Image (cartoon, rainbow, N blue to C red; front, top):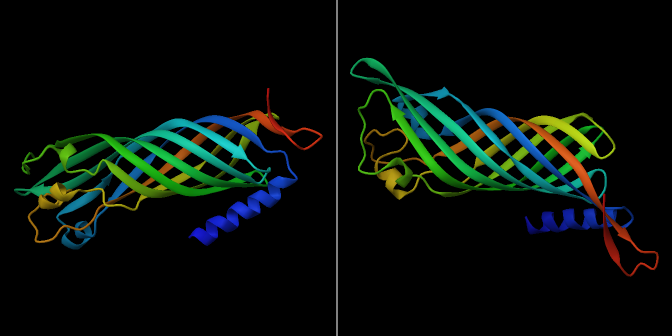
Length: 238
């Protein structure tokens, strides 16, 4: 992994040596859905996934080495909902979890021929958990905020294309996929077998997969310009 990162940095450095780097800022938002993956859900078939809408919005700061290569830092406020159906005393019931949190993403983006592809790590902090269950059957000794790992790590990738804009302003649209690599559930959650909430000898890890349609607006606001003597680099803002 370190060798790959070193190689990318060297490539960007070589390409950027003869180019004029610049910064851009942007705002973005999106809508989509998510999927809590837990192996036990599929093995036991005690509850069934029910897709619900989620949303995300935030801002980004980008550093462009050249036209084709960019590093971005995103701060996103994300809310996603996972629904389940299950049978309680012969009657179908619905259970729903809503999680809100702050996502920090450090993304490498390549831009070519009006399209882009991005990939990078994601750090997520869960700020609130809401729970509803019209079956009202399953209870735990903990609140649902107590069974979730507040700090999570994952990976994100996205792709899309340029929609319209001017010389220093542009709008892009695309898809972003987020996958939480760490277990979303803590030790307390494993004791109550969250999110299944059915007694079991073992508790499998839970990972969240999100897919969002993203609209992004970017504005180029500053260039790094070297003086003729080559001794000093200045930021030219417009």
